[in-house]
Length: 147
Image (cartoon, rainbow, N blue to C red):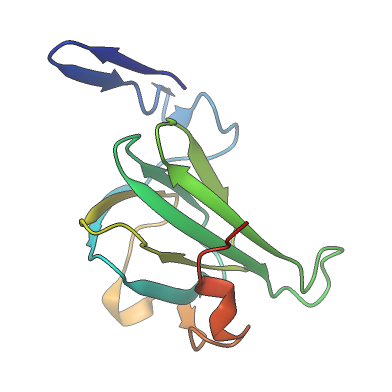
């Protein structure tokens, strides 16, 4: 994905859909698009779904730290964690499969817009989500890393 800067702003193509399937994520059938605003200095974690897969997108003008934690018991990557920066001048997406706990931290002094593309529609009475305390891996997981 490219971010194309211009004198009057910029342009990013986010998704291409062919017959209901995302071209860049084979097998992912888009069911709902969500947007959330994350406030400065916030941590929103941990959250997971048992059946729903997600794709996250953050504009190149914003900056978000995404955290991933494989809590699937029978996975070969069970217990592994990742920290991934989204935005920060780059236009890219993050695929989060079901069973992976995920969250975010905002270090910037401005709100960040996060777009979430999901393959299952949210149903309040039959929701597919679980929460894990944000500091389950320790508070340092969500702190900025310094050189």
